[in-house]
Image (tube, rainbow, N blue to C red):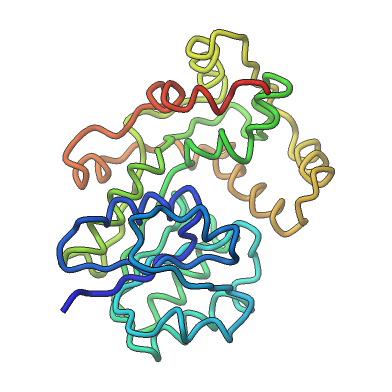
Length: 288
């Protein structure tokens, strides 16, 4: 009988790649969890089924978890209150018979206990379910989503990371790793540090984007205060902004620079480079 894996965030950058990478793997069926109909429209067609799911609505938990034995768990960026929104779902998953969880965590979380990922890791280790932590570097695809407006409209990387280095990773690689961990045994109780093969400053990222896109891209290195003000003007909640500030704090403190071999080992190849990512996503960075 095929194992049923629930993929939370299945309409997002990482979740979509997990669904795609699981397609065709023997013995695994995928249930894509999405917040609403708009999200369902972004789920890859490779998903075996789609279900409405909302961390803030416990009435959606049972249908999402019915028959599920494996879970890919990711925290929605807007959620910072883990005890209120994530803990009830983890408790329900354990009670529903989910045997193992793969959690999308954060590189450096063991040294930055203020970020929500740290609390979620603690909850999972105490849940009774087998767990695997994927501690990931900064997603390359955040550049064409969260930071796209500044790049397209102002040719600027408006990111409060100082001169810290970041070992960026492509979400396509994260999806491939997560699919392998979900589909095969032997990863229980393991922590994998997922990074690309190089650590770059945002100044170096701007230089690569300048070369590939054929127009000057600047890195303005705003202060945390200036960054927060702009994100607030764009309608982001203070909770979301505080999480982002926490993530970039790890970069400024040098905690996002480490390069690890885990991704290459699990992929069986070199991770996608940032230059290749920008090349593949060139159309996303074109002004309208």
